[in-house]
Image (cartoon, rainbow, N blue to C red; front, side):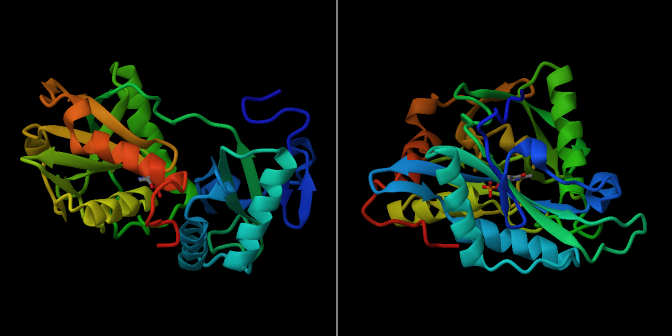
Length: 299
Ligand code: PMP
C-alpha cells in the first residue's frame, strides 16, 4: 500500500477519523499549487506512564504561529489538538510514533491566502530519520532562505523546497546530509535539523534569526543548562566548524545524531567521548520521562 499506512491505518481530517484513502482533497488547493500550508513533526513515546507526546504544546504553538503569519484561518485550541492526537494514536494502536499534522488551504488560484483551511493529522511508526550511524555531511551550495523573503521560523510546506534541493545535492555527491549557510555565510542548519558544534568542552549553536528554532534544540539547551554543560548561541563560519572537536544535529525526527565529517574534515573527537553523545542519552531519557526533573512542559 504505502510506506506510511496500511489497510488498518486511521488519519484525522477535520472532525472525522478515516482511512487515508477516504481523504477529500481539492485539486485547486493553494497548498498543492503554491506551497501555502503549515505542518508539524511531532513524536510520541512509550513511557512507563503510557504514551506521551513530547512537547505537544510547543509543536502546536508553532503550527498556530505558522497559520497566523501566513494569514490562514485556523481555530483549533492547543488542548483540542493534543486531545485529537492522543485519540488518533489510540485508534492506530501506536505508542512510539511520528505525528504529522498539516493545515491544508482551500481552493484559491490567486495569491492571497485562501480563507478556507482544513486540518489533517497522520501518524506512522518511524525510526530515527537519519539513522544511528555518524553522518558524512557537505557544505551545501544552497543557502537557507533570506529571513526577509519568508518567515523562516514557520513550518510552511513551500519552504521545504530549499531543504529538498540541499538533500538531493548531498545524496548526488555521496554525502548523507548538507550544512546550509545563511545569507551572511554563517552556518545555519541542515535540511531538517539544527546543528551544534563542540570546541574546547563548550557547545555552540547558531542563534535564532536564519534557522528553524527547533524544539529539540531548545530541549538540548535546557538540558545543558540543567547539567551545567556550557552552551552558547553564537554565529560561526564553516571554517570555524572545520576546527570543531565534534558536531551533532538535533531534530524531532532525527533526535540527536553525531557527525563523522564535514567535506574533507573529519571531526577528531571520538563520538562516545563527546558532549553530543552524553546529550543524546539525556534526550532519550527526557522524552521517555525517565529523568527526575522533566522538561516536557517547557515551550
Ligand atoms: N530545522 C529544520 C529546517 C527543520 O525542518 C526542523 C524540523 N522541524 C528542525 C530544524 C528541527 O526542529 P524540531 O527540533 O522542532 O523538530
